[in-house]
Every structure is written in C-alpha cells, then in structure tokens.
Image (cartoon, rainbow, N blue to C red; front, side, top):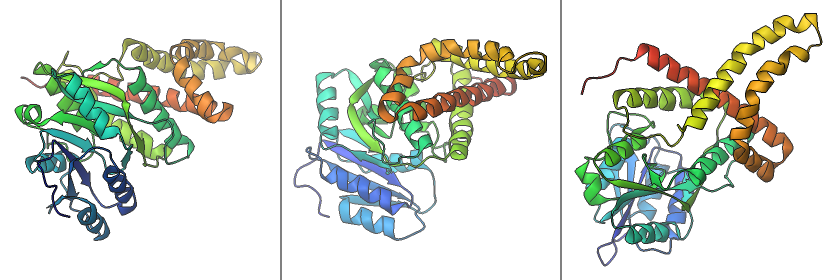
Length: 337
C-alpha cells in the first residue's frame, strides 16, 4: 500500500506473530479509523505466510524480524521506522473503535505536558467463555476506576510521544515474551519526570480467549513474578495500578481464609459441617465489600451465576498473585543500582 501523501502525525505500530484471524480484525478496524495515520506492522518471525500477507495488504510498511524476539523488540523496531510524532501501540488481538485514535490525539493535545496515555478494554469482549469474560471485565474495571495520573503504561492500546519514547530508549528488549515490558516502560517514564495518563474513554475490544490454566500460568510466570521483582528492584517507582492498599488487604484476607479452611474441615465432624466455615467466610466478607463495584459489574453484565463464578475466580487471582509475590520476596535479592 502506498504511503500517505502527507507526513502523518500518528504512527500506529502493530506487532504480530501468526494468528491471522485476529490480526485481520485488528487491521481492518484500524483502517476504519476517523483519524489519518501511518500503519507500521511488525512481523515477529511468524511461521505461516497468511499473517504477513494480511499485513502487507493493510499496512503502509511491514517490518519482518527474522528471529522471534518478543513484542518489546517488535515495537521498538516499528518505532525506529515511524514517521509520526505520536506513536500508538495496538496489540494484534485488539480491535479499536473508529474514534480511538482521534480520542488519543485530542487528549494529548489538551495535555501538552503529558508524555503518554493508555485506554481500556470495553465491557463486551469477543470471547464469551467465563474466564475470558472475567479477565476482560476485571481489566475494564481496573482501568475505569484507576487514577488519571498513572504510574504505569499499557501497550495493548496506548500512545507515547516519540520524543519521550526515544528519550527513555523505548521498551526493554530483555523481555523476550509478552510480559510486563509496558509496565516497566511506564515506570521509567514516570521516574524520569514524565506524565502518563489513564483515559478509559479510549476504548478497544479484546479478542483473546482465556482458559483457566492459561490464565494462572500467564499471571504467575509473566506478570506477578517479574512485576514483584521489578517493584523490589525499584521501590517507589510506581507501576502499581493493581496494587492499591485495598487490593493488598484482599490478598492478605484471602490467604488467611485459605489457611482457615483446613481448620474448619477438621472441626466439621464435631458439629454441623457449615458451622466451622464461619471464619473463612467472615474473612472474605471484607473482600466482597472492597470489590463490590466489580462484582456488581459481573452481575449486571452476565447475571448471578457468572457473578458467583467471577467472585471465586477473583479470590483465586488474589491467592496465586499473593503466593507469587511472597515467593519473590523470600527468594529474590534486590539488584544493586
């Protein structure tokens, strides 16, 4: 596709590795945007030919990496070839709305002191499975209730001024798989004195299908553990969108409730089987109160059965997240500056 006649202000960078069906939906939605832009697609060593063909059909420029290097390296490669002053990063499993890019431009134009912004998933994901819907609504809720002045970044649907991106040297390519490379970048942006905005009105739709085992594995190995190490290595530098004190309290309460269950079961033969369970249930009551707006969203969107499933998935999330953080605190030695 021929490049635009004038130099674009926005360059959209889409890294991808196979999954042509998702990539096609992503690129078609981008081309329906109301805002002019340059589209740079970065092929992170896809194994099949179809994804590359789709990229060449829709993008102004396609860059291919010969070795699978991960989204951090792919995004950096796209940024090196960008002509726009504003870099917009969109994941290949994300579908933007027609006004997503226009909203990004307007928000940053109204906030000339801000270096970057990121948006949110909508509340109607493409995949309808229970775990997929839970993950999407959790992300949606966190991004709609978080502070506007963020201490992190999200590269699924986020924008950074190129001058600021270059000043902090882009994404850390040490992250060779999708992980917390965007959180780490946001922490460096904020630590350098730059501002990052959370703008939930910048919306998109997620196409990923989550399974329970996949969710736990990804959360523990690619998020909780590397994130905990980062917070230990760089205390006080931010990156804490999901780490408000109330959420830390929930982690502690879920851990205590889990420890109380064996005691409750041991006492069960002595009395009614339900009587000894009052302690773990009592410990979970504040968790219900703290997260009532999230659970109300579950109820509103999918009804009572989903809300109950979402509640217990959320307790599982607190449990393994807290366990991973505790493990890192015991085993990880802080890196010297």
